[in-house]
Image (cartoon, rainbow, N blue to C red; front, side):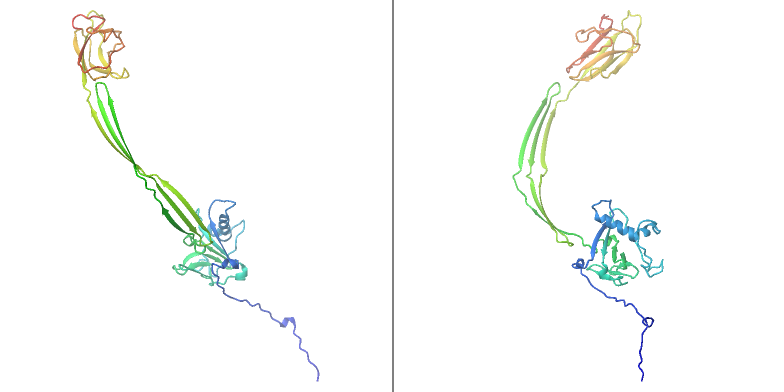
Length: 380
């Protein structure tokens, strides 16, 4: 009986890789121990010390830029998403990308190391749960909130192990908001209010006498001292900040003022002006009286112009007692005429363009007669 021998050639052997699919659960309190990291991205101005801006810019460039611009990039680096979705382009199941680009927009990025997920994260295997949301993936790279009508929250990159939250309403989904508790203790120091009373009496003399009596009462309330203690607790790290602020607030001052004023009304004085031109003159220009009560800064014509030689009443000027009155002749023809008072040359000497002025008139009505060129015959 002979011996037989079986020999296997390499071509007779088939080798097939075995892919294992497994699931694992990680709690937020211990996720960092497995290399799972969370980072914030903020669209702000560039700052070499701002890691949040760099996170935002990196995620936008790698995973969203071509969706924002509408075409594939021709420069820099970007991720090829051709194998991301198994759905046909344009269908409702296709990979949908939204990325906030307004100033100050925020995103959250979760990075899972390959030692945790292997070759790929399994499609429809992602579940992130909390008390108020349940985030799942739809198998095409979209992250939805199944507790809120499957609203789109962000995207998952299966082969990269990257989860990006772009919905601003969910920006604190993975990174909790800082919870701040504030306790306030107010201490008020009570001091009797201060009351001061001041009485002021003012009397102005002259023809018009005014007496003003003012009584002012001021009440000043004491200040209030407030001590505020603020405690801030972060849910992402064990950080406690205690701040004590002491504020002294000065209250408003209440002032009550009572004023009594007694006024004696100043009367008016009537100045009657008579005048005539010199009968012996060769020309008789048209002239008219003018008066001023502000020292000659402004003048007001009064009465009617005249050229006759009859002594007649030409004007009546009404002024306030105690005021200063100036009288002059307004000569339309610019003729140099010299006028004087025939009755009282001491109070109104000769004048041409210069006015006659009476200071501090009393309450006596007066009559003045003027004549031209010193001709003081008769009444004028």
